[in-house]
Image (tube, rainbow, N blue to C red):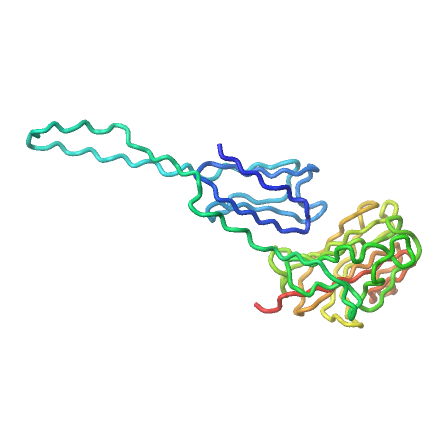
Length: 305
């Protein structure tokens, strides 16, 4: 029996594409998850798909410990039998040899005739700090842009302070009360293309914020914003406000349509109680509470068709 095992996939922001050259046979695809909760949708929007000989055979994302597909593939074509010769009207001087009753079946070739095509390069971009903008920025276009460790910390003068504090375009500052991973903290922001392609204007994108929620998380809220105006006075547009479902490390996500701008930015404002935007009418984008943490991520997108 033929069996191929993929490597373990551990990076939730990575798009993995594996290509194998397999002999003709019948196969099943088995996907397993270490934690027994599949790859969608409690802690992100993961999915998988399998094609064989150009045809889609299985896809999904929601399962528990493992999921097995139906059989696919084939064992090759049935051999074609030689036609029976018509008897001769005249006797042969030399006896006709007996026909072969069992046709010769060629053995399948298990070695590929050419090496498999290498999987395409997936552009996962990690931001660097942009001094002019005052925030992390991904200058190249990729399928995702992540802040990496640039915003991991909170405030300044803390045991774990943010590098290049405050990491916001307009100077929106963190509250300087509380402690890192004791009170509200934003560890990382990632913007990804939902369809797995490059980030492109007009397409859906997902913002994921890895945060540390205080206590049981009940008093915390993450406000997600985007802007197409990357300058010192951006016009922030609220996408949604999300509450964590518990304390400690949490992954909070929202989706939205990327506007028509080559350089854009996302903001996460993680606050303890207070009001969205720090204003009574919710028109602001910086809550400014003593325990709050706000960070921006600037990234590039494709604007052409």
